[in-house]
Amino acid sequence: MGAIATTRQTASAVEEEAQYLTFMLGTEMFAIGILCIKEIIEYGNLTVVPMMPAFVRGVINLRGAVVPVVDLSARFGRPNSTISRRSCVVIIEAASADGLAQDIGLLVDTVSAVLEIPASQIEPPPSFGAKIRADFISGMAKVDGKFVIVLEVDRVLSIDEMSELAQASPAALEAPES
Image 1 (cartoon, rainbow, N blue to C red):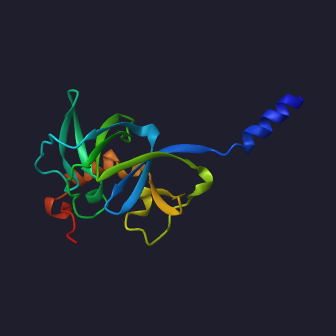
Image 2: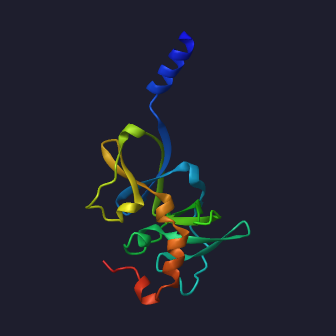
Image 3: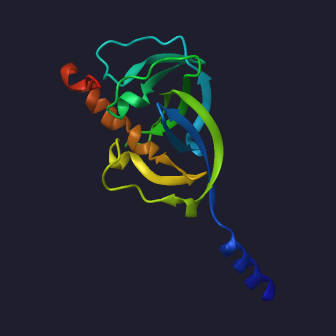
């Protein structure tokens, strides 16, 4: 019985950590849990699809599958990302409301690192003042004295919401100019 009590005590004392992929959009650092990430590829060979929302840059052929590429900066209502040699596409598996999985590419300015962030270092998202929708943020992580915005991938890449936006009028879909 003493062994069981000791095991329980040790398990509760261990702080829960999760791994996150960190990346940059402009000067801000963001993070996504690695469990939903399939791979990271170099940006290139993109096919533009007419009548798509401004944040959908086009599609790529990923081993025979058509994968839409979402410009994360434009998805947040900012100007489109400027493509550079460090631009990457992070392939994420997103689920729709009916439970079907869909691969989606996220265009980011640069991938930084995979970090283990303890749960105690992640604060609740701010209720105001963020430059992106509050429901897109799952928390604010403290890493080396700086904040990293931890994204709520299911909300950012809501297939159902993006489908609704794709069916809206093209004038309403244009990214705001800065």
